[in-house]
Length: 132
Image 1 (cartoon, one colour):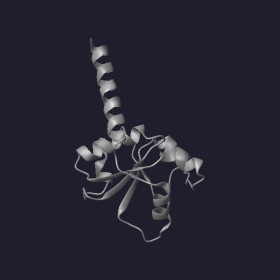
Image 2 (cartoon, one colour):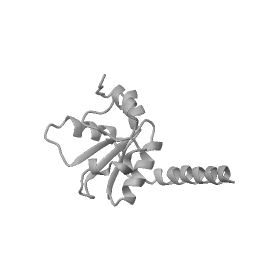
Image 3 (cartoon, one colour):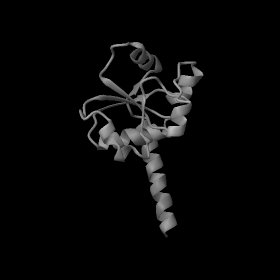
Image 4 (spheres, helix red, strand yellow):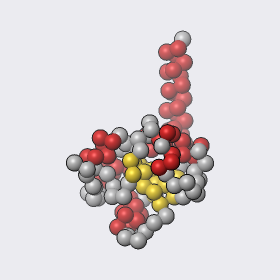
């Protein structure tokens, strides 16, 4: 019975994330690139919710890394202003959707999803920073 309950809960979270993800506000790669390239731009946090290993191999300049599985315990690393602009991305969008939902439940009101996530960023040949 526990396996069945866990499977049903996982299915519910997956379906909820998929439905919610289709309605979430997004920001284009071009807009994020312009923010990253503007030397005096502030007023946004770029949040990469992939694993630390993925982040090291290539991330968007100025992004901070908090894995979606560790986000709930690391909210102090984000702006204390719940109205701050936070742009979230992962590899393909699934983990970003989970993170965005968590942030909204914590009261953050300006959560944006990077269209296409890092897969599209790389496919478009946009610059990545590595830590290796």
